[in-house]
Image (tube, one colour):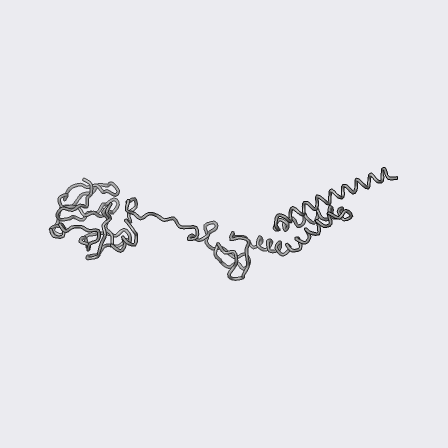
Amino acid sequence: MSADTTFEGPRIPVRCAQCGQHYQVSSAHAGKTARCRKCGATFQVPPVSPVTAPDQRAATAPQSSQRPSAAAGQGDFCAVCQGPIAAGEPVTNCPNCKAVYHSDCWEYNKGCGLYGCPEAPPTEKLNTLEMPMSYWGKEQKNCPACNREIQAAAIRCRHCGATFRSARPEDKAGFYAHAAVERNLPSVRRGTVWLLVLSIVPCTAPLAAIFGTAWYLRHRHEVRELPALHGALCKLAIGVAVGQSVFGLIVAAAHTMFGG
């Protein structure tokens, strides 16, 4: 037989030795072998004893979803709060697996607390905003400026006021290198404009081709931090300067060879 909790007559408290599931079995099955509906293990139903037998009124009373615990002191165990069910406490039986719970525990859990039971509450996925941001499994990071601990999602240190490009952690060397680049950005922006102007003027184009190329190679990291337009202007200016310089050399050579 399988363990059943539909009661006719006195009830016998039984506990599955394999998974610990509690049952209240009719005394008609005393001495028989039962099978646990949760794990499938078999166990022996104990014979009727004077402790478990004869209160016909309690046995024949209609069972409701919420009732004072008639099994108090007989080993009922609430799977939600992991505590015993005391005498007289209001309980709720799972309509599917018949497990017994404190009524308030059932309401708090919004369903059965046994894994695999159809009455178990559905799992709810956390939204992105409900989960703290973390990097490499850590929710805290050290400020590269003052080395004090701040939140992993912070882009500004609440201790020293340092600001960061992103929430991604960075070391002290990288932080100060980027800070130095940012300090040079205004002068690099002006240098980009001057390079374009000098490359357009024919008499200064050779200087722009030589010194402008050297200047760009030296400040290329700062130029990359500027909007893409500035990088394109630098390359365009160097191209124009080199083109004008080559054109000027060709004109000068032709004038020397064929000039009268």
